[in-house]
Length: 124
Image (cartoon, rainbow, N blue to C red):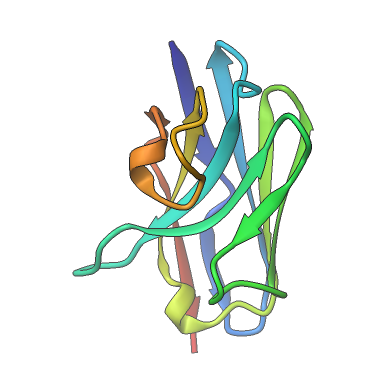
């Protein structure tokens, strides 16, 4: 079992930055990949970024490329550095862990464990 806890969310003005953290307890996160997703009110959950543990390869949604950076520091923590934030980035952000390769990293169905989410609000 893996328990994931996100932190670092909050209220920020447009153009500002936030750094989200994802901490794991139980099994380590280093099974296959860790991803970040977000869900805005009335919208479906969408992929934001992912990092593969074996080679550090990262993938990003087009909407955040060049502004967000996903990184890891050990087998139990993953970060999402968010710069140049926009009001449309407002959402609940979720950390997710995939224990094995299911076909990719950019769909929620590829992930086995999820955190409870952290709210990010960007004011205009």
